Length: 214
Image (tube, rainbow, N blue to C red):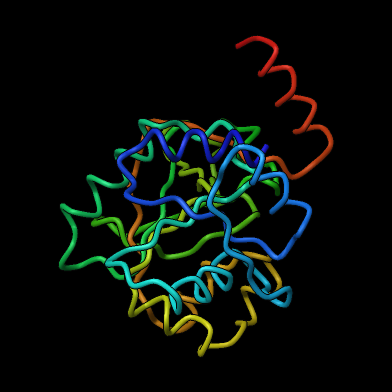
């Protein structure tokens, strides 16, 4: 799975791709396909926390956190993110991505994170619960489905570990809520691209079927 994520990333406009892990087993596997690996501490609670350690070693303008359980993340989406970073350079502290293609099943699924934003694309909240609530029944084309990809500049990433885990972050198990709980704006890039993470045995089975069809 991690190899497929890496293969997608190196085909994109991203300047450098680093696999950050605390697992020797993963590191050995990545060596087989010549992926660049950086070993990190085993106590990190999230991918963003892990990225803070990488940011202490390397100085880049922006860091894109692609989660290792997103084997179908499109190269086109990654390129769109890079273009968005440069077009939003002056205003972007923290960013993430949400797909406009969210079904009713996605909306009801706690493994699919939903997002709501201001009119100009700043996140108001993320939740595993159905969000927003529809008083008169689900309305297609309204819900944003969060995709597991984050963008940070080096200043905001350095602040993250200093903030400490937030109450909402702890209960929702959503690392991006730490920013919102501390008043730091998270900008959302809307996209029509889709991707899905693999969090359950059922999703793994679905992914295997998809690979067989490719």
